[in-house]
Length: 172
Image 1 (tube, rainbow, N blue to C red):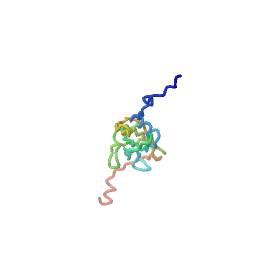
Image 2 (cartoon, helix red, strand yellow; image 1 turned 45 degrees about the vertical axis):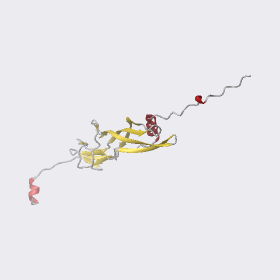
Image 3 (tube, rainbow, N blue to C red; image 1 turned 120 degrees about the vertical axis):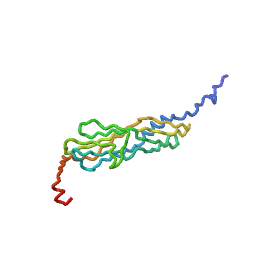
């Protein structure tokens, strides 16, 4: 009489941890990623012939996810910024986020007035994580893009008037 074969202990599959890249993709897919924080100066209105300034106020972020019972932090770093000024000109694509005035790194001069414009910022991010199972650290370049738009604003015509007489009358 034969007895059924018992599975050998070698037949039990060993635990295979997820790859660091898989962890990064799962984190990005399951978490809410914040935008880069588009800032437009001046706020609420722009003028023809005078540069509008833009910058991204957030260039890094972290998201934490749980993978197979282990918490993992994924660091996001903004790698490129595409500012579309909404007037049909080519977007300004740069790796520089810029900063608040007086920084003029990212600027655009409107040439015609408009009742309403919006500026769109598309930011491309790189994600980096350390695998909690293996200790391996890895990055994925350009893993995601975020998109945000400014509040609508008016572009007004500007007029420059140079006069010596007015200054003289004021005693200057």
